[in-house]
Amino acid sequence: MARIRNIVILTGAGVSAESGIDTFRAGSDGGPSLWEQHRVEDVATPEGFARDPDLVLGFYDMRRAAIQTKQPNPAHHALARLDAQWEGGLLIVTQNVDDLHERAGARRVLHMHGEHLKAWCTACDTRSRWTAPLIDRPRCPGCGAAALRPDVVWFGEMPYEMDTIYAALRDADLFVSVGTSGAVYPAAGFVRDAREVGAWTLELNLERSQGSHWFQETRLGRASELVPAWVDEVLAARA
Ligand code: OAD
Image 1 (cartoon, rainbow, N blue to C red):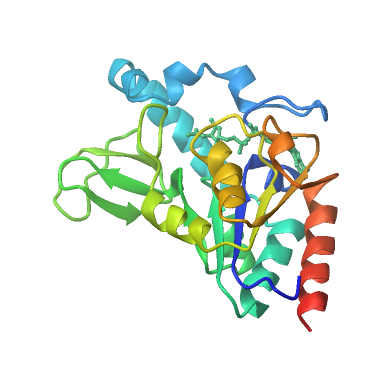
Image 2 (tube, rainbow, N blue to C red):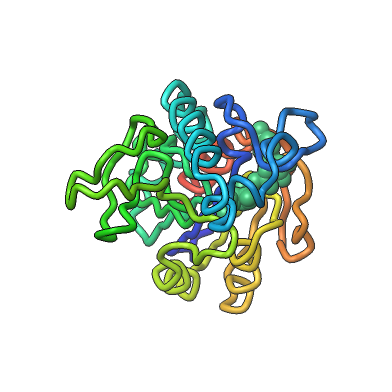
């Protein structure tokens, strides 16, 4: 720990599960999962949106409204504490489209799969903070076109800020993955990128992820318990 300066943390749906936000895939905890209730190709692809925009806009309107009623849990708060106190490099790369890391106070957060609370105008290519429904085709505050869509990365689209993420991974001494199944690339491959540059790799998850064998260390349990304990360890070792 004493030699660690740069930390990259990848988070997934498991970090928000205890805030009451459904994960995407069913896990051993038996909780509800989004992709069991909706077909990915209908609600999370550009083709699905072209086929039935009302279905897709309605789906994201519901999710956007729901996350605004949720609160960060101890895992988000612990990561925000680490962000505030860690003087070295730190980047929280989240696959989550909720804003719970930010609401817990974290600042060095990057949303590689977009954000529920933003709308993207496909006419003028600008993004605006958005908390209201999109189904009634509101106009873009910038150009006035009725061409807003959720600013969420769908399957077949390029995740955001990959250059920044890979630059952080190249400098990483410690890579930690929290609450992600390792089912979706490129995020699922970050552990290998981190291993290649000699970073220590740690997985914190309820159960082993699909790429679990790539991690040098795995701790299994709830994020609300594992993450605060790990953050305490990191900050104590630094002191
Ligand atoms: P998944 O739903 O695939 O996986 C959630 C992971 O969190 C599983 O491994 C669970 O075991 C774990 N988990 C559940 N509850 C937990 C808890 N309380 N504490 C710790 N771990 C817990 O979600 P992601 O891996 O985030 O992308 O999914 C990756 C991407 O697939 C998403 O960003 C989304 C989705 O399709 C797009 O839509 C582009």
